[in-house]
Length: 244
Ligand SMILES: NC(=O)c1ccc[n+]([C@@H]2O[C@H](COP(=O)([O-])OP(=O)(O)OC[C@H]3O[C@@H](n4cnc5c(N)ncnc54)[C@H](O)[C@@H]3O)[C@@H](O)[C@H]2O)c1
Image (cartoon, rainbow, N blue to C red; front, side):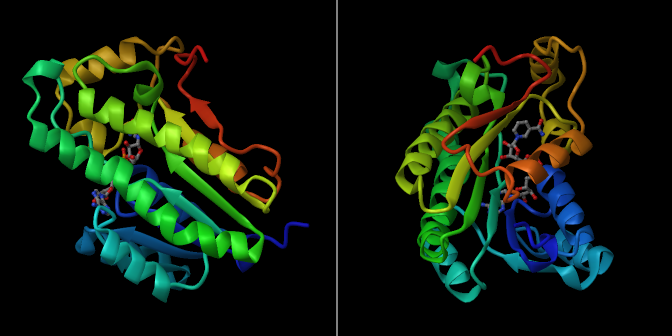
């Protein structure tokens, strides 16, 4: 029986911008207790002022395991974790033109960041026999976007991790899923070369970008108690682009 969002502890990474910010605003509005993790202190402080006491900023670099372990040891046990922290790294480059340091940086945040937070939170969720863990992956992880090697490969790794974790905790009351959006206009997308954005949006059969409202509505369902028989799955939010 869903006791309502008011009793839920929700942690969102990448909370200070884009999808993470929209999710924090929605869950704070539903009067859940929301902890927003990010490295951008000024934007988190702004959100605290706007969202009020249901939102608590937490400064943490998810790429750093020691920092993540320390932060999660101090937070109250999470009912919900949404991993939205992510970067694109360099784009509009052929694979052989990429800089190995940039590829590594993207993996450290997109894959290792989500791995670190899930490593910290899953034992707590399993112990409490309830949890909803959602990794924000990308259609790029399923399809591979030309010009985006690091991003696409790191998101494919997140989808692989979701399948593993979903199976490992199946039957414990905890679910682990991913979500694969196509393009939603956020500061991340605004920072991409126009040519790369055109490549991505031209591939969407519905001929438009997704909206933050559509993202929030889908996440709200996936992390609710009602979504209890789906795990290890990557949900689609791609306007028809995904073919599997
Ligand atoms: N916007 C899209 O079209 C789209 C599509 C598919 C997937 N995604 C994924 O959704 C997620 C959110 O994207 P967005 O568009 O909201 O991006 P965004 O750039 O608007 O927000 C990302 C946030 O992550 C934070 N962050 C970056 N590195 C961090 C770190 N090491 N530790 C903690 N926080 C860190 C940033 O400070 C920022 O606040 C990303 O994982 C992205 O790959 C976005």
